[in-house]
Length: 280
Image (cartoon, rainbow, N blue to C red; front, side, top):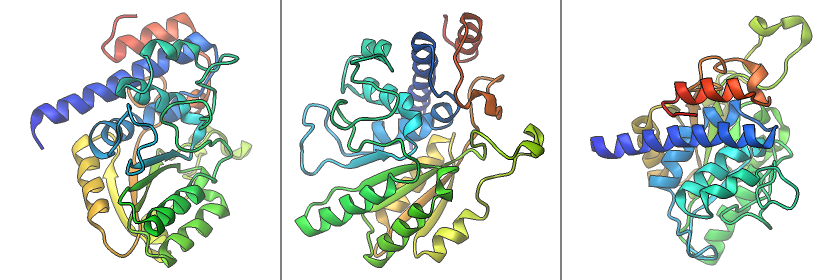
């Protein structure tokens, strides 16, 4: 991997984070922590891994991407805008009435969105369907599903995982944004006592018949390597467990569950953008 490519993907992730902050501030509401933790994942997928063409939305051989953790939609919208699916200025309409960019992805409205999501744990099931459909239709596209580590507590995720392995869907890859910090916990734990939602993920996915890979979710080279290994896997689906930090890039948001979803004041926006290397 050449230095120029690595630096380009890092810069795209930085821009995604800045757009997330600006958009949520402008809307007066929205999720922040999850989109910030997934910035490098989205950068790597949309600018190096996915076989896509923003000018051909109905291209049968395009790779499919599903954001199962649909509340992180503004991160996806930022990546789509930078990739050319719609103007970056349209991000100013995020979460507004009649906007194409709603608080959760809507496949009937937003260019580049392959599946409507929001009800957690339900994104991987259509991913299995897409991967199986590709095989039955003789198409070569790959399906990618980005999961949150909180939502994989849903039983539907593991039902879909079993089915995917049963049909040897090696054209399906799940990526788990493993930031270890879902929105809430049991009240008695307090912030310091928050527990990771699911432990020993590699063993769990392997037990369901998947190839489990691990990556530093903020290291683009680590992510690219894992994506390549997933694409080379034959005979079973793959999962990439991407170790991330919730709120990554903004010091007062990092590992702070308060910023799972929280409006930004003018001062919050100013501080956040400055830390990301951008003038407010």
